[in-house]
Image (tube, rainbow, N blue to C red; front, side, top):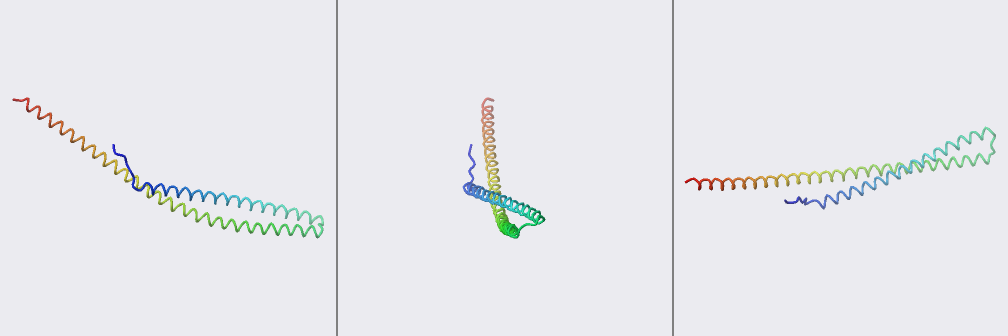
Length: 155
């Protein structure tokens, strides 16, 4: 029995490999986003805790030097939060671009896979027709031989 060979198999393998690499990049970007998001949440929590602590300390008549330290720390936290949000926006943009790239390569792979499936189906249908034709020819030959032998037996 003949074996199906897809002429674009190398291209299909290449596209599948590209899709895998693009998905890996997307996965790494998503992980980086999650890490950056958790970092920003930690900074936000520290800012809230420090602000609460400052309010408590102000009620206790805090010294001016200590008050300045709290304010500087809160300013630094605010700057870090702002930087973290910039990083999150940048990562979000990169993730969107990468998702679009993954979707595009998936479309290509699906088109080539569908073409492969169509050609494979056509190949096996043609093979089945060929086998059916051979069987019909074999049956016709057997019938003709049987008929001829029967006619020779009748005098």
